[in-house]
Image 1 (cartoon, rainbow, N blue to C red):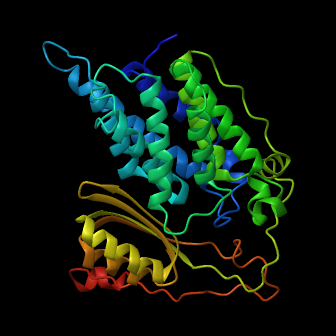
Image 2 (spheres, helix red, strand yellow; image 1 turned 30 degrees about the horizontal axis):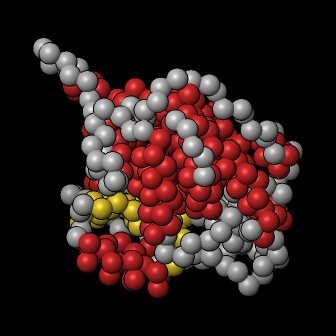
Length: 355
């Protein structure tokens, strides 16, 4: 059993987390009712971790290509993992997970702790600090934190890790158990979860990631969580989860995500601007590169705000499906909540005729 979190353990963590989310993504998608019941949280978390995994593998492949291969250091691997998650983050939960990994990297890779250099590996004390910093930085990245979500699960994991003595295996196992307990309590903290009879989907994904970390460090598989009845029903097509009756609650029509090159001051102004446009605002990253996520009715305004702040790219705009959590509660027929148009600029009349 290793006493340090080293590059071998981090590499294994990425692989095991990707495997766990691949196995559980359908279940997690099925219990996704908050903040929008669009059934993609498991998929978004999987794609986020897949990007992190690819970045870590690229570090090993690159350093092994020379005549005298040199093993990568923990800072190199952690920075790659965090950067990969940042540029590949999908959805609300995926974006928060990217910031959780960045928070860990700030301690494990950048020496943001009392113990100094961790190039060979991190001990239990440093790992406790890393988990705490992860939870804190993720909460700071969310404009309006809500309890009963992945943020609560992350905070409980960090608190549980801080409460135990022992080596890294003991610390990560405590974090995993703390996360499981917090996840089970989420329906009592968020009415929409209680009404649907499920736990928080983002928190469920984080439990899978922490279970993978525990297995990577200890070599022992974390116990598989029992699938919930609500998740089983949706995966098997038996029924559809119902959201609570809130007839006056109509959410934004679009999810807007983009990467942004900008300085800290510009990003602070951007946060303020986007917070007035919609909800589910999460801005993660730093050092000039950010991942911006927000739900809005005016997608164009959200993108324009990014242009004013810096250089946005990899812009993804998703229109929430009619009949989702925002529209299914109404007795009135679903309607388009925002008008859309396509402007095509093409060279020549022939291509123009296609439109």
